[in-house]
Amino acid sequence: MKIILLGAPGAGKGTQAEVISERLQIPTISTGNIIREALKTGTEMGLKAKSFMDAGQLVPDDVVIGIIKERLAKDDCQNGFILDGFPRTIPQAEALDNMGVVIDKVIDIEVKDETIINRMSGRRVCEKCGASYHLEHKKPSVDGVCDKCAGTLVQRKDDHPDTVKARLEVYHKETEPLKDYYSKQGKLAIVEGQSEIEETTSLILAAIEA
Ligand code: ADP
Ligand code: ZN
Image (tube, rainbow, N blue to C red; front, side):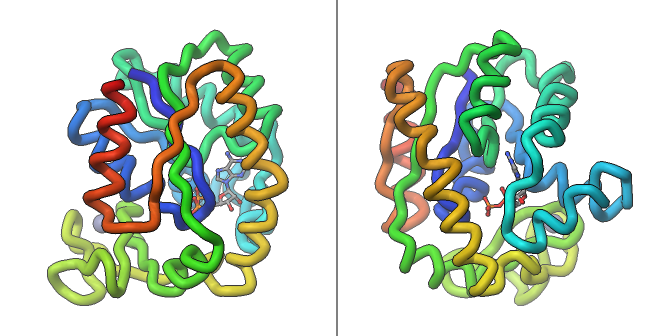
């Protein structure tokens, strides 16, 4: 199963990807996490991406397309995968098609902008493994500590309110047209993402099995 999760930043793609990954036993590939990892280890790609990311702008297409090519070539992707945060532009979607990757389903998680701005202020991520939490909706067992790896939970620089607004603008302009792109391919399923995490998960699993 090859799945794309679409949706605005903060729509819950990462959280849902973790659950579906576990359920279907396929890896999640998050370009955001890969880039943040590269940043931490200080690779050239990471350095190139940093200024875009911190400003809430997209990293250039050729950089992320390169990342995805490399990642999808690995063994663990052979039985399928979930793409979280890629593609984010029409050229990225076209690159995926040109690579001969046949996507089964594209799930778009719909959440209103105002809800997103609200949610992002409470989001915390694990410094070490990238798992995401929320101060109200998805608390870790111990405040400030990752359940999975005991890493420290921090707020991402790009989760500050002004940056979130910039990211939403970019989303509407660059990423939202992908709904039309995949709808034309007959692959799009739209899922309501405003309510409880578990409810959204059920809707996604139903859409995948449909
Ligand atoms: P979110 O889904 O919460 O916006 P991500 O972790 O997916 O966060 O992405 C964070 C940032 O990483 C983006 O704002 C962008 O700068 C960069 N990035 C991630 N994926 C892509 C992509 N496919 N194309 C361009 N930039 C990307
Ligand atoms: Zn962790």
